[in-house]
Image (cartoon, rainbow, N blue to C red):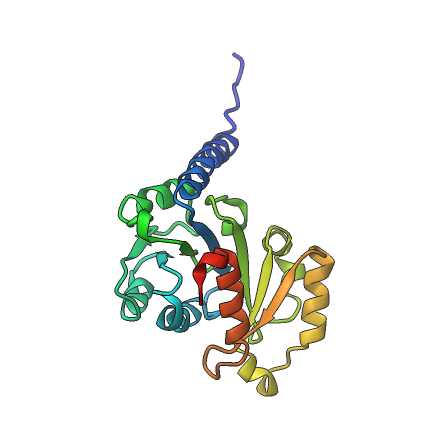
Amino acid sequence: MTVRKIEVRERVMARNDELAAQVRDRLAGHGITAINLMSSPGAGKTTLLERTLAVLAEPLDIAVVAGDVQTQNDADRLAAHTGRLVQAIVTGGACHLDALQVNDALDHIDLDKTRLLIIENVGNLVCPASWDLGEKARVVLFTVTEGDDKPLKYPKMFEKADWVVLTKTDLLPYVPFDMQRAVQNCLQINPKLRFIQVSAMSGHGMDEWFDFLRQSVGPMAGV
């Protein structure tokens, strides 16, 4: 009897890519820029977004989709900093968001009053790298409390990224992190990467981060 091998992963990924294209078209139809924000757990995504929403939620018409494995704690934290809906996605154990989840989340967001969509992906440096969510740009947070060799250990995440935001720079005097080596390791994986260094706690680099978001939305931001 012949054994037929079904390539389940390939089919799932192909379906996700189809849905991601639909998300991308849907967002483009409303003039919305989407950013996929990824990192390992504890790199500071939620704190960075709290600071961002406090300053730019209204000027840039920001909507947020916040993914987490078991709770909506991050979404609740973010909702305290904006009057706009923060859409929570609880994956129930899955280590990444997918395009279907994002497409469903868009049903609950007022797209006509949104110009920037920030997707806070699940904290993981492996799984999210493989899943297109329909975003315009992929941003990886790389915290100084991690080893500066992270890009070499998790190359696909950095290979697929457009920007690297080096976070928690206020801790540099207290941790054995070589910033120059970290940047070199990133560029070894992806020479096209661009970098921003920030500390959401001290405010260092936040203006540069805000400028990046303004430029992502375009000249209509007016701020």
